[in-house]
Structure formats: structure tokens, C-alpha cells
Image 1 (cartoon, rainbow, N blue to C red):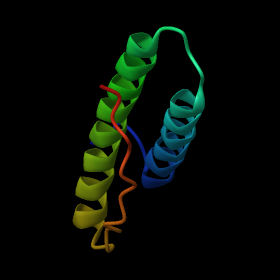
Image 2: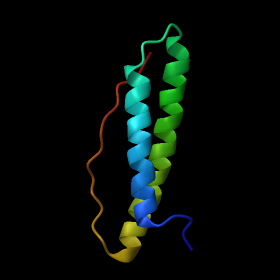
Image 3: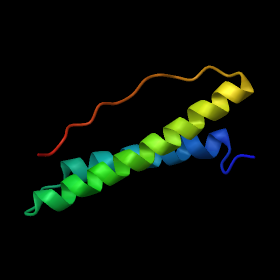
Image 4: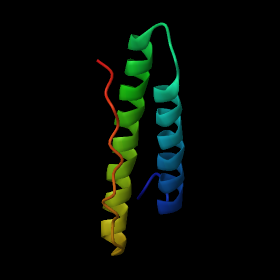
Length: 74
């Protein structure tokens, strides 16, 4: 039993990609909070991506391995 359908997971991943991109482009006086937010969103995105890959493997569909690399704030 899956929590989300393949389409729902793909939509959630797209939304998280947009949030991550927007968070990285923010000019913030507190760089640490933006960095933390990006790290948390990236972790959540990775969990959804793993769930999507597992569902695609179970259904016999090919998983796309394209992954956007994100800059890390230090």
C-alpha cells in the first residue's frame, strides 16, 4: 500500500524544487535560516524521490535519474 500515487509524488517533488529554488534566491540577512530551510526541503524532496523510485520500480516503469544539484550555504 502506497501513501501517494506516482503523479502525486511527481507533483510534490516539483513543488519542493520550486520552494528550494525560491529559498536559495532569497536575499536574507540571516543566511543560516535560509540554509536550514533549504536543507530541510532537500531532505523532504529526497524522501519523496526515493518513494517515487520504489513505486516506479514496482510498476515496471523506468525511473528518471536526472537530479538537480543544489548549492550549499555554508
